[in-house]
Amino acid sequence: MEQITLENSTLKVSRLCFGGCPMGGHGWGDVSKAEVIKAVHSALDKKVNFFDTADIYGRGESEKILGEALRGRREEAVIASKFGVRMDANNKAIYDNSPQWINETLNNSLKRLKTDYIDLYQIHYRDDKTSLVEIVETLEKLKKEEKIRYFGLSNLKMSDVNEITHVKSHFSTFQNEFSLANRDHEPVIFKSTHELGLSPLTWGSLGQGILTGKYDSQSKFDSNDRRSRPIYKNFHGEKLQHNLRIVEGLRNIADQINKPVSAVAIRWILDFLPGSVVITGVKSREQLEMNELSLGWTLDRSQVSHLCKIFNTEVTEIMNSENIGVM
Ligand SMILES: NC(=O)c1ccc[n+]([C@@H]2O[C@H](COP(=O)([O-])OP(=O)(O)OC[C@H]3O[C@@H](n4cnc5c(N)ncnc54)[C@H](OP(=O)(O)O)[C@@H]3O)[C@@H](O)[C@H]2O)c1
Image (tube, rainbow, N blue to C red; front, top):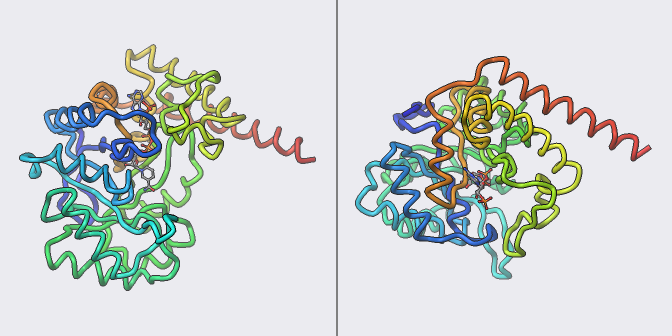
């Protein structure tokens, strides 16, 4: 199993992380709990030991299912969860990093996960009110109480980097969206990896599924699937066309080396960002097993740069055509 030790920690994890957002079943179309639990067991059997979830995924349902799946096998797993987004009295999502909320939500997460500790506790989003120093103080206290082991950040912006520099040794990881469908965060990912010395975890690593090669321009999603909404740009308009050209490039390589398109998309991240962990959302054992085929080999340099080139060429073309439209 291809593993790494996360920075500033003793956590040894597989470079493929089981993403728990779809298992929450909220806005991801139909998901079978029994099938997801089988996938978790299959992951553990193959030493894919890293699981990412959040208190907010499926309003707690994701943590609940993960806790149920890990019953009797807790010690084999490294659990990453998150805090920082909650529903207010009007059922509207708000950001909250206050010590009160961290304490309350952590206790609920532990109950749902049926565990005494979370290995990696991550700030999901900053609330722009609570200082990082105050968050770190709260988390250090929880570490002393042995409710969490290490902590991380997510959705970093370039403007966060200075503030983090002063407390960087307290953190192990950060997670941002990154894939061949979305390289918007590449500058902050490089800066945080090299200047802050944190381990990068990538989310949306399959572009929410578009980079698996199973969708085309005719694909439709049910109304209970968030990807039906134009805000999920990877599946709409010019961005969809751009992604389908990237999929063509992935498929050419996949056919030559006899791997699934999804495995090549994941491998590109693993090779492009050494020291990273790729999180992929998984709904079934079959999907997990396909994603595991990304591990234990490498793309050669020319394949990595060929895929970069397809991304860049197409982006330039899109930008040019958008500019023409604006003019
Ligand atoms: N920090 C954050 O703010 C944040 C935000 C989002 C996600 N995340 C984390 O990152 C994880 C990954 O991101 P994501 O779930 O949004 O997107 P993703 O991993 O890019 O895509 C996941 C979707 O792709 C499809 N899929 C996965 N493997 C497949 C395979 N081998 N063959 C065919 N289809 C496959 C599944 O959906 P279908 O079968 O329905 O197509 C799955 O739900 C999440 O689960 C979560 O843990 C973090």
